[in-house]
Image 1 (spheres, rainbow, N blue to C red):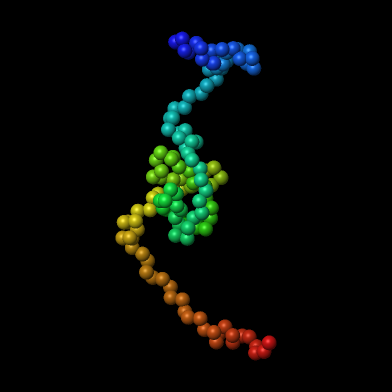
Image 2: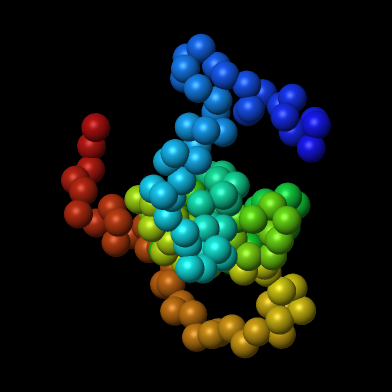
Length: 136
């Protein structure tokens, strides 16, 4: 208790004209409590910007994360808890729009791909130049 009395919060400060503890206790009735303390966690997430790769992934701390394909080629804001970086959240205008999950390479290797790709016809130079006149 002696060390608490010597602490600077118990000494009168010239700017406050009182002890900081006394000023705090006089305003303690104005404090609001939060019913769910976990709801405050996103306020303390680390924020970084990443460019989305053509395969709709981003890289963070040498790990790949999947993001929605609509962000391909764009720079997005990513927020995450550094202590638990298994899930990232992408934000737009300070609103969480999607969760980014780590890429599972085993699931990705076994994923069925749609092989019905449209065949692009070969380029016909004859048809390209048929509309142009000779000369010049």
